[in-house]
Structure formats: structure tokens, C-alpha cells
View 1: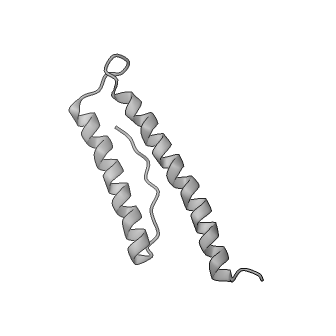
View 2: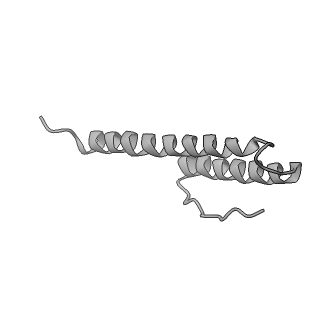
Length: 78
């Protein structure tokens, strides 16, 4: 018996979203390596800007799933 269209969409979502979430998590792990003060120089303002940009993007992501709004693409700069 063939899968329903809804079941196919669900499987596709789980596959694609799972890979994308893992990619984001891996990228955050990579960004965390920049916290090593032996290799990098930064100040509290830099950290604050990064955290604000990440939190803002997560809020937009949450809204996209709760209100069907399109996310906007922003470019981060210090």
C-alpha cells in the first residue's frame, strides 16, 4: 500500500529538518571554539552582539512555525 501524501510530507520534513538542525548545531559548536582566548581576542560587546543576533534569529524561527510568516535573511556584522 502506498503512503499518503501527508505521510510523505511528514517523512520529508523529518529528513530535511533533522539534517538542517544538525548542521546548525554543528555550526554553533564551531562558533563556540572562538571562545578560546588563547586563539582569539574579543570583548563583551562582541559577545553581546553575537548572542543578540542568534537569539533574534531563533525568535524569528519560532514565529515562522507558529504564525506561518516568512523569515528574513539578515547578515551579521560586528
